[in-house]
Image 1 (cartoon, rainbow, N blue to C red):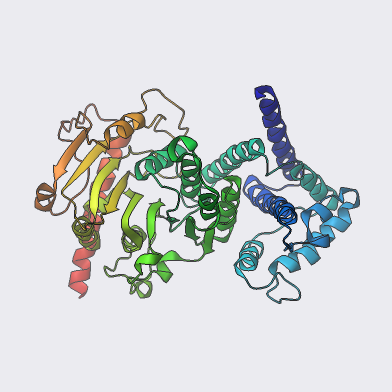
Image 2: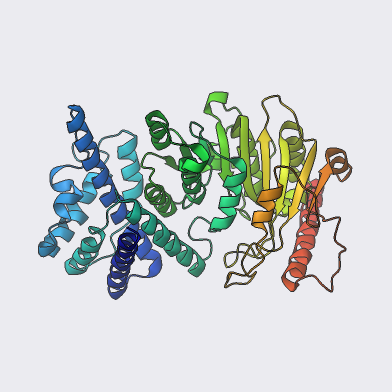
Length: 493
């Protein structure tokens, strides 16, 4: 059995390699062939899902009408590789009109599924200009089977590796910064999403958090065997998110399909523009996982929706997550160091966070953890909204100095990964050389400064890594610039 799986794994890897090689020969660069493969995968996966639903409907003796039927079904046009030019002409003309037209007689209608198709296909393109080249790529994709666990697992690995490489080539391209998989898994492990809960990422990017949460919930060791009702809820009522970039939206949508979730509620739009301070409890989420874009600036007229106004997108995203966390909910977000110590709006948000939520854990990540995309020092902020309304009494800090990879552009694996130690200690809040507890009274005395200052370590400049020293200097400079900015605002006022 294992030999059969290994053989299929090699076959799938070869199929994707062949498709990439063909696109490369056509002069399509890596960034664009990820887009090309994504929408082809999407149509092939959708066709398989329609065939599956058709079979189930026949078994249950209930009618099922395909959304893409006849000539428009993948299983019809994708097999005509012997008529390559006709195939290309059909896809570029008739099929594209079907997928993007808002007119009911030409398009797919105006329900959520039709809208999703329009959002995707209005913002992608076919990079193959020759019929023969397009037919060869389609022929390779047609060999994949999205109903097969082996194919989906291997495809998911290949796809995420492609996304990672593309993001490295053009930092910030795929979902701002590509969140390292081992960091995501540690965050999911702490918040522990459960079947029946609603999981949200306000800037889902390539859907790394939502995909890992899906895998976690489905894991029989953690959740047991899920009932039919739980599986239906998992498909259509569990995963929610918004993404501002059209291409990244497609990549994230495709990634969720590869994780076996076809009905994720993913929206294309600007989360901060649609933010509301008054969210009904039933519309909130039990679990929020995110790595919001940071370093961005928000126009003043778009800050009016927020209780604490700030030009820094990271400060606004923290507020958005606070407003959308349900009673009994758990949140984990990656934030830049400045959010934990800056004055002004950040201080106001920290004070509110500590007084209205239980900020139980701060995981201080090493500078360089998000290389090659950014060298910014980051932390993971974990907080709950307790049903009894209790606020923060103390914060457990863990200073991670080794995440299992070199803190260089190459990020090669190294021994000494401390993430398993963090996961073993966080629940009981074990104190040690790199973990400590700070009571709320002490945090208030520090003027709500939440930056990780390890009391067990002397600030020994001789023995600190060079990258950490540089990051420390940059953080201090950032603090000075923020103070100057606040002063400037006071003087202007």
